[in-house]
Amino acid sequence: MNVGQVSGVFGVKGWVKVYSFTDPRENILQYSPWILKKNGKIQEIKLLGGRRQGSLVVAELQGISDRDIAAELMGADILIRKEQLPKANDGEYYWADLIGLDVVNEDGCKLGKVDHLLETGANDVLVVVHGELERLIPFLQQSTILKIDLGDGQITVDWDPDF
Image (cartoon, rainbow, N blue to C red; front, side, top):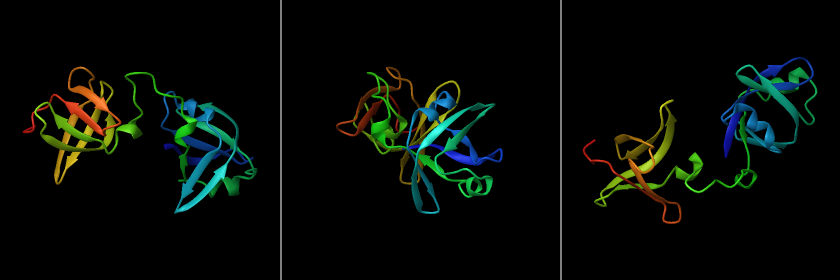
């Protein structure tokens, strides 16, 4: 599961700047080890510490004690194992659990599959793709999102197929 990206170096002792996808951003510091993926190369590394620094997070990683070595990590995706995440509460879902699910409306019309989600500020939006057609469906539970069945791999929505 992708939780962020190494975006730069911080200081001279090998700390890295991190753009975190977690909310709040510093929650990325709760997970260790990190699995860093860059150019097809995967490296598991233990997180030693870190803190929020403005809109970014800075982190100290085991075995990275030099700015030049840290610079080699720039652009690496920060992955964690799904088992490292806390269990979602009832009615809450991780985006990664929704990606790839079939989306159908109340009449059983297949609208496509969830390709990704967008965070708009007001509410999240499902990006549902069916061939060349892309639909943007507001993620409003009990309104447009009627049922999510992870076991069956399907989301039922109140959505007109012509939209």
